[in-house]
Length: 441
Image 1 (cartoon, rainbow, N blue to C red):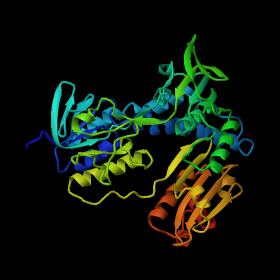
Image 2: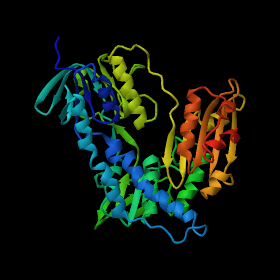
Image 3: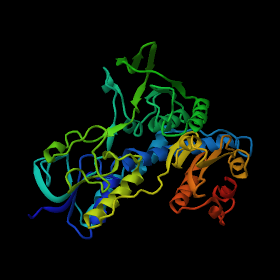
Image 4: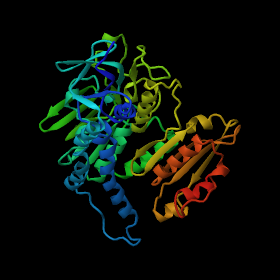
């Protein structure tokens, strides 16, 4: 049967784009997008977040060096910082679309709905493809309580013209920590409301408790073990209610995690079952329909839902469609949270390693007084390394420090290469965080 396209990609974010570009030289490809070209990360996710975070980094660096060669205090000018962010994000959709056009990839704008195993409807137009790639990502989760529609999302926060006087983040994961940190540094009264007493469950508690103290020190108020039952308007404010808990804030943001963007996608028309957790796939990222793939945040695989993971999967799916038969194999995946300092991890979980002392050697270093962190006046720097005693190879690491992003990428590369600690004793640029590696084991 002749199809309109060799491959139809539903979703113009990092994962879908990686698949489309990987196929473009050999196939006729269509990309469908129903929101902003480029997807969540560059438009209203990790990229704009870190641009705002840059203001926090500079302010904190100045505070740490106050009286040590730097005088006065830095202050965040929110409208100017937002203009800095928009100077980048405003060009993303058009730039993405232009890139696709220059490459010869066809595009359609609108909500996509599967009509069958090879057919997709976009508005009033129907198109067919031999292969279909679903890369629709995640969307914010809202609590199932009255008034939940009054809550804002991270997308709203990352495009605020003016910073509200008081903000509450509902949830205690990545979004809460990172955006609360930015808001507090910019001068807002900030609250984090959690349904338990744990912060950042994906990270080891010993590190998250240390990070929590830094967040408290920065002025953030924590409200653990709160299950909201109702949200209601109160003049220009938002009222949050639970048993034995009431709070009024200028803005309340849902940060309870994200759900797979599968609603209204017409999966049932193709014989595919899915729920808010995602679309089940095999180890080739195929759904139950062999010509339909699901990648990135929308699939049900357990890997962290991160932009580089989506891109990796997109390139993998392209190779599969072009004839590769190898099951997917993931490299070490580093994850990081940008708070008052950075918290990052990779490889074997610290708590799992500590529970298996016969197999793993765990070394903890308080690096606060080491030259690198003394130079930065980083008063809370810590590094944990995990070595597999059987192989002698690096198995994991956790870094709580200003330069965590640099170290964790080095650790990830070492794990992928199967290196032993002694093999990290090479010549690095000095002085740098990497030049300290030989002392961390």
